[in-house]
Length: 235
Image (tube, rainbow, N blue to C red; front, side, top):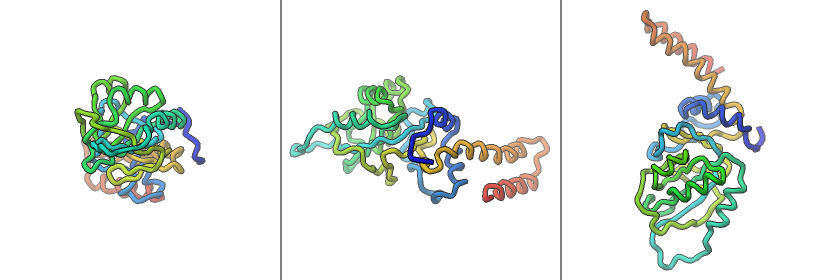
């Protein structure tokens, strides 16, 4: 496919599947090693009841530590114009550059509200957001290390460039699929085929589940079905 965004219908279809199913579906295409393309478990959903989130990355970098000598322009207005200019749905990806990430929150109720108005569906950071009840009430998702109390001296350092979240690079425009299990990056070149692959994964797994749930379960039958499934995945 081209780098143009998926249709709203395609986005909604991807939201039917959880991230483990999407991760398994991506493996079908053999476009990347299986141990890359998702964030480590320390980046967790802080609003797990909101279900699946799908959107394109808009990126920023912040610091919240106190630096009395810090100088530079206030980037907030230009950053918000950047967010507004990008196709949606969008996910705000925020890299915390402090030596100990999570000192101060970039996102709370106010920032979540303006980002939702600009077409964002959630925020992912390697730091800590706050105001989780108010933000969850907006239907806006939060992912991070944990929650925190203060915004401290949080300030934008840069935006619209590749960022690193918990050791994983996320580029502007990357397609993000996330839920209570974690965060997955869908390769854009296969994005329009992943939902079909999710259907395939579920169909391949169904005989295994039915075998396990059967009153006359037979282990050898299960082993045979699993071998058949593995062979089909390799086709």
